[in-house]
Length: 260
Image (cartoon, rainbow, N blue to C red; front, side):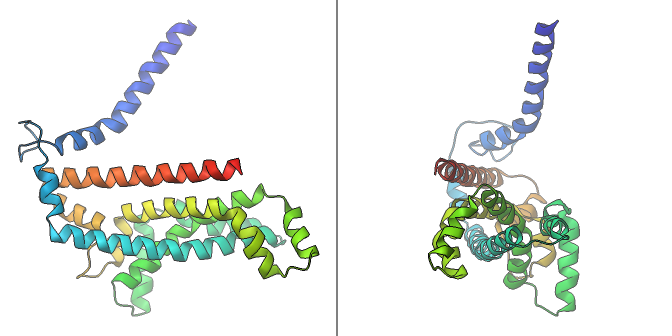
């Protein structure tokens, strides 16, 4: 009976993994298809990658996405780190509520966040463009860094900070010389995860984007409306490779931080 259950569990797990990853595998495979139609396979070719890297619109969208991700993650890293340190230091009854509110953007559907940001920026009369994109992306990137840093600080020995202050260090000096180096692996791993999420975002970007600015995910979404082409498959494959690389670096940083 136990062997049968084990086999059924293995079959079920295989079907689930196939359901999740088979479409991704198809996109990657057909990005090397020589034929323009994704319904036929005519041989291996790199022509769509060549066409992709020669498309100026794609490079412009990529530049916008990298600038957006870098600025939003930098701002989120500062705010999230300071917020996590503050939440760990304060002692009041509503602390749990504050922690819940700080992580709420992760649980709210992106379409709701996008509509809220759009209405908020319209009330402030902010022109839609890079500024509104950076503010919106910073807002939903903060919880990723805050949770990472908060978890890191929970495992820290408070005696380290107390020893620094006993030796005459000011609170600011203690933060920069003791606390910040200890939580830096969590800050970097959270920032990389936030950067990957920012690079992948479509819904919020559509709501707060300007008419003359395109990010890479929005560019992909608009092109897919006219049908999936091998060039889009090549672009998705490159984005997948970059995301996997960022997550691998994040994992390596986390392991390095745990070893210390």
